[in-house]
Amino acid sequence: MLNQQTLNCPASFSGIGLHSGNRVNMTILPAPAGSGVRFRRVDLDGKPEIEARVENVSETNRSTTLAKGNVKIHTVEHVLAALAGYGIDNAIVEIDANEPPIADGSSREFCKIIQTAGIVALPEKKEFYTPTEPIEIRLGETVMTLFPDEQFKITCTSADKKGRFTQFYSTEVTPKTWEKDLAHARTFCFYEEIEFLYKNGLIKGGSLENAVVIRDDAVLTTEPLRYPEEFVRHKMLDIVGDLSLLGKSIRGHVIAVRPGHAGNVELVRKIVEQMKRPLRAVQAFAPPPVNADLPAPPAAEEGAMDIEQIMKLLPHRYPILMVDRILSLRDNKIVGLKSVSVNEPYFQGHFPGHPIMPGVLQIEAMAQVGGLLMMKNAGTGRQLAYFMAANGVKWRKPVLPGDTLIIEVELMKARGKICKANGVCKVDGEIVSEAEVTFMLRDAE
Image 1 (cartoon, one colour):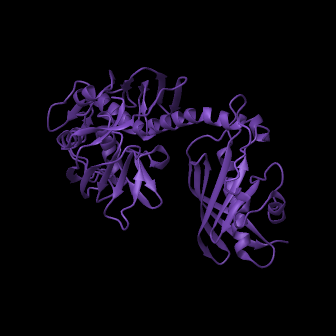
Image 2 (cartoon, one colour; image 1 turned 180 degrees about the horizontal axis):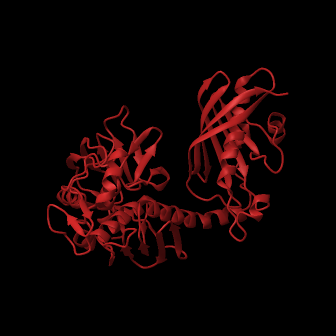
Image 3 (cartoon, rainbow, N blue to C red; image 1 turned 60 degrees about the vertical axis):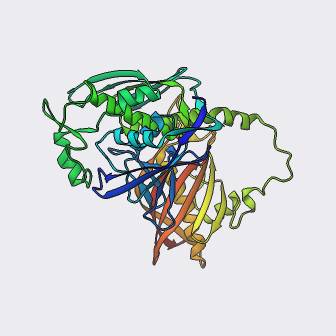
């Protein structure tokens, strides 16, 4: 299977969402080569789309959620697993609610509609990625390692925190083994988790029709277990779906211990990081371009500021000045740049032999860039922006020496001298941290 694939014709399924409990209609449409898999919310104005790529993952609590702006799609992993398991590279998944139907808690029903629609090969070649060296992530009790291999394999061990129902399974993932050995494994949870999930607005559509419940040593289900190791096989089903967020098929062997969506997604982010290393090295050693048709540098954009202009407004100085340039400043949005050098003083202790930019300094960078936006908008008089609060803080991936940090801050509310803004830091176009920051403007003494 060396060519890209899509569906032969649309495939539809209706049901309820696991967490929302809402009725939802889903149609999977064919898509052209190179377009990848994307979700389309046909219930919203403009029918917004979200690409099934790791950079669009916003949450991994009990399921994988994609988001773009205010548009979200929850629990995408079972649909993605069905497409990836059959080797389908390109498809549009239309839904009229905020998550696909849960069906029976597995990918079985999605496999049926895909089989009915049929799969067709496209002229363009399929993209594969083989890791250049082993990749490992550790996240709490989760340990995942990816080794180079000629095929795609998964070896997995699952267990709860008390060691109950410890299971092991290993298989090479092909369309045949996917359909036979993984696709029918249902989602499951422990009885003591149910109250917490309900109180947090989750599993409103959950029942024994679409999940297996474990209570002490008993397994509650409407039918016998479909596999002797159904729990670990469902974890592997989730891995197939989450790893498809790479946008390429993997040639490698995944070894997972107590996996979950957070660990699966973090592994994808590590793969993306490895994929970009050769490109960074080429860029670092390449001669400067001699193309006269290149676009103007960022400094030519409206509102751009160099370091001298920044220091006339900000009181911060070495070693706490966390912005080198302002690339643009328009209305209520500002974009700044920080070149992260290996000479940054904090790398001496954070961490020796493994330098990582502290997350709190990324938030400080947002605060300083946001402060410049507030002071520019204040207009008259010399003002200072005091950082008051940060909410919804998330750090998504490490920032390393040599990275260029792009800081984007957008003003959301301004009441009197109190301002709220959304801030994100990006490296190579990927969000590495985000927060909602609050400022107060005061006259400078």
